[in-house]
Length: 317
Length: 317
Image 1 (cartoon, rainbow over the protein chains, first blue to last red):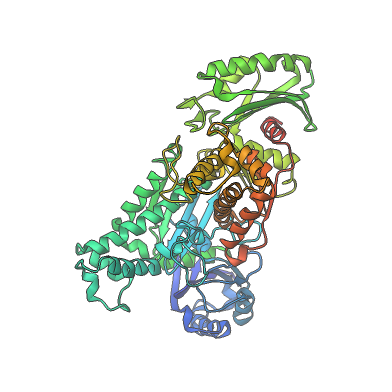
Image 2 (tube, rainbow over the protein chains, first blue to last red; image 1 turned 90 degrees about the horizontal axis):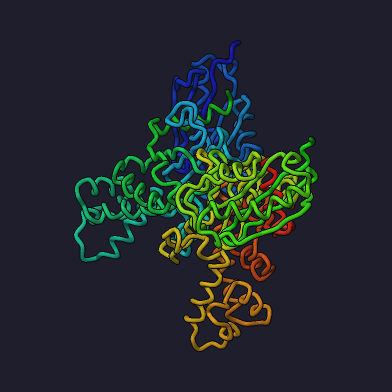
């Protein structure tokens, strides 16, 4: 039987998205579940299996499939394992590619979630025909995929491209999972924006803010965004602050690999210009003149779920 | 006539070193001059020409040479130009490969000085047979050469690998040439160590120090080293401080490209363990667990002048 399809699975800190992809890069069908609802990785595999098998069967059964491509935090392309992922409940070294392969009965490959997204951008998105670019995923955490000379950078051990964990504010905000201080992820993620909101509301106790109408549980990067577009000063300052730190980090990355493009990606990019303007300003201000006004800093044009699923499936083609 | 030799020229912020290299990587003869003694690049070319031609003639004349390989700060392999090098007197875009080629009459290629040093390490030094490594040159400035999958990283425009200008202390020490604040180079260069010494002597006015016996002009990274090995507290703290910042930066670089080795290079490495111990400690402390205790952080075993000349000449072979 002709192998017409691949499965793409994107395991994120919050959601796991998966879909059936054909050779043209069309997603035939897709679904999702909450990653951290499963304390044991075996239960997670069972849940994916339960939702995925009917989709596979509707597409003609496992015989119509070439395999499964997966993206996951700290996913290693060499070993098929997730190793010590700070944003997942499963600790240590998780042989997820092997477990998935045994459960579904299809050859399974794994890579870093952010690398999968970068492959999606390279094959189907705004980094098409671009040989030097970096994608930064601004979601629950901050992920990154680096492409140099048309090749994914995975390093000597498969773990390269953990830019969310680079230190940009030495001695700064504590990362609850890694124990490190001042990493990019503690500021430029959805969690980071929420923490910045809590800090700023405390810093300016006298200043009126729409943010004060929300309970601490309701306060998310989304509510901060909604208050910002309604003109709230503190909410706007939160995005200025976030963009400033993100932009400084991007400048550092540019001076490493001198990419043509940086593609921003993930939930936080819904803030649009509120985030883009201060980010671009801080990036340019921290670049050597030889790098200034050269890098195209853009938002991904792919739907987030799509890019990750397509990118993961690309491991198989 | 058989082309048995190449010229290697390394243009540094302080010295320019050049030599005649054979195909085995032996330096037959070498010499040097002060780079910044020449306000005009044409005068610099004349001075190199005057010293180099007798060496070329002793080796059999230009006909015995394949060409000239040069390394220079902000040297661009695509264009043969030095562009806006902050540590050189020649401003703007300098067509140095073309000028040298016209003057000497040999095909001339140019790359970044730190990339040349990395090529020297890869061909003849302690990165032999290593496909993923970074070299950091700790001299007047801080340079870097990045190798991924056995290939020099030059980026889309030839300028990749300016790690000395990445920001590690946002809002920190002012870089007198670039105008940027808190870049690695302002701390982990010979100039940076001297500035740290001046700052610390001011910070602890009550504390006795051998460093106070030197005039401000005499105070260099070398005098700081000599005082440190004689047990001077402030001098030792200067290296602790320098290593801490350097190590934090190295951790960030590791999380970018996950190299097998980092090779440190240049004048500051003469400090040996005084620099290595705090650097390694800070690097490990700022790495995610997946990267810890994996990276070989070592000093170059090549003589500094040799690696740069050999690396530059390697552009030609």
